[in-house]
Image (tube, rainbow, N blue to C red):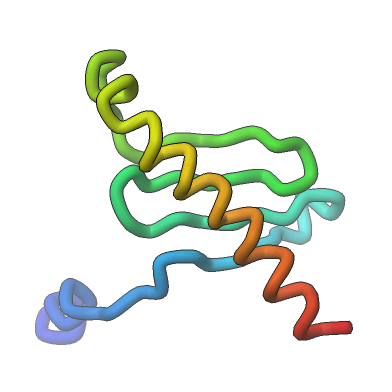
Length: 84
């Protein structure tokens, strides 16, 4: 069992994932798996940051953070087109 757990460290994840939950029926999420990791609620535009960073780091990386969020919306739109 321990060997299986250790293998998860080497799992290749996509940069973006879509998630939902039956207890939050009106919400759908995009998860960004690389720094800065976050969960974006597409329905409410709320972001839950999974990584912590200082205000200084946020300012220094503002462009890349903004791009990651923008790409999250683009990823969602692209994925939803596949279901039309």
